[in-house]
Amino acid sequence: MAQGERGRAASPIRVALRRRARWLHGDTALAVLVLLPSIIAVAIFIYGFIVWTGYISTVKWNSSIEDYTSVGLENWRTLFGMERFRWDLRNLVLYAAAFMSQCIIFGFLIAVLLNQKIKGEAIFRTIVIFPFAVSGVVTGVAWRWLMQPTTGINLILQRIGFTNFDFQWNADPTLGILAISLAAGWQFTGYIMALYLAGLRGISDEVREAALVDGASTYRLYRHIIIPLLMPVTFTAVVLTGMGSIRVFDLVMILAGPAFSTDTLAFHMYQATFGQYRWSLGAALGFLMIFLSLFLVVPYMRSMRGEVER
View 1: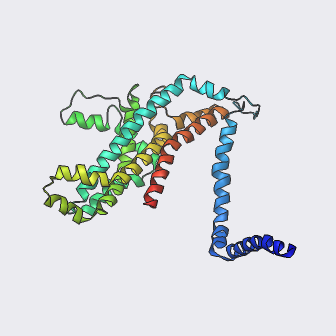
View 2: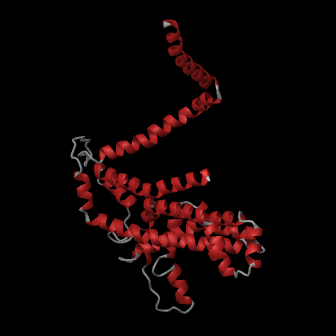
View 3: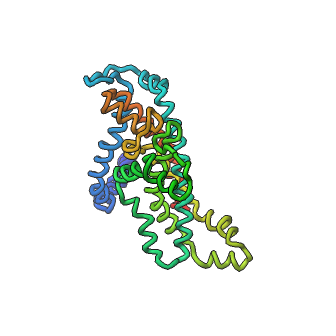
């Protein structure tokens, strides 16, 4: 009787050991061993440093001398009370609205044009996407010349008849951030165009032909069929341009306007950390940028998981 009970008790243990042995000798163990170095690297150099940044934002390290004295949320209260921070948020909203609209609208329209398989499509596609391959610093230097009050865009417009046109572009104290978004949009629109073009090419001709046979106009075709089918692409474009808006730095560094007129969170973080040695304040800004990015990334990941499950 006792031996039977011991046998029944040992049975689940033997089953568990057999499963573990199969796991160790199966493909799962090999996959874990291959991925383990990458998992460790990501855990340390990405998530580890995110946690470290959050910790530094709660200590009193605001000079060139390290000071890990805990101050709670004092750095955050200081940040939220700064006039410069309010300018950062204002500029983020303006920049994101202009940058995202420019990239998505023009990227989509150019993709629709190229999807008609016009003559010279490959050349035109290369011209449109080429700015994306140019570094932000080179783009900034080129647009700084174009935005000079006496040269570039102003001079061209004056020569063709707009004699009184004298916009200050990035030097404008209120709308300078929009001028920077124009340069960023010029650089990134080609990439969004490529996304939309791939999406358009993935829609079968049968869908278009069926809609046209049913009497749908071109407007209705795009309004009720093409654009809804491209919503995953649009969602991706919104996430990419939104992330770019939060972390824009290089163009602001090159095209910075007066006072805080073109200031951004990333530029403020850079100056606070490496210019003023206010490490804890810079960490608070960096952690805030990560937090804002989560509002874009988390819904995107959930959406992609839903697409995979369907």
